[in-house]
Length: 268
Image 1 (cartoon, helix red, strand yellow):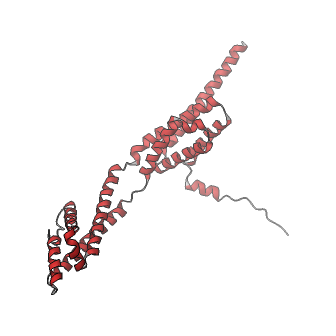
Image 2 (cartoon, rainbow, N blue to C red):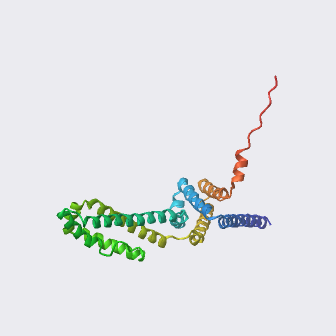
Image 3 (cartoon, rainbow, N blue to C red):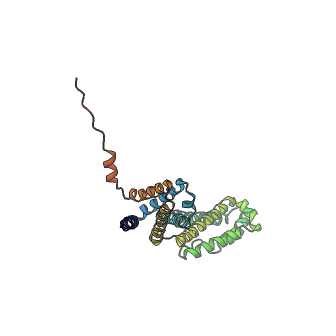
């Protein structure tokens, strides 16, 4: 009779523990699924920070924690705000500066063809043949084709036979500026395309992040009950607080911060 009563108590205790864990799992899973992308990003960061500060070796070296750290690093990059507009503006400025610089070089060299100085005129003629290789204005071409023409002109002007004529015409620095502008334009233009190709939308990684968080919390629950130590119970409690914190609204924070202790009136 006593054994049966004891067995029933043990069964109820296990049932209570199991159902409590199920409730905890459903609670943090539900909260993780409800929060927005930015809250998901800060939740992952805080979980990793909490585990790191706990100093528990098994918690830090587990496979599920390593996976969480990995997906978090990719998710944090994905959640960063895009700077496409600033890059577009920078590319546009370089594109315009390149065209302006080339136009100035073209006009100056063309003007020097009528120089009364025979050496200057000869230098200008040699340079103009290369500078005017495709004409003065090719803005009607595709952007890629325009870049190719600038590259071909600059490559020609870098050849040894043009170095002395450039010095005589005072165009060495101007051509160097055109070359630098062209290089910066190409780097920024191609870099923007490369970054766009690598960019992953947060929504594409969100399920992976949620699953990783759930998997780690399941492991923490299991290890806490298995290890049965104060440090593990503290870690689990702290991690559960991280889920509660991401759902605190600005309104709630204001309400808490504006509560002041009552003052006692003084009488004379």
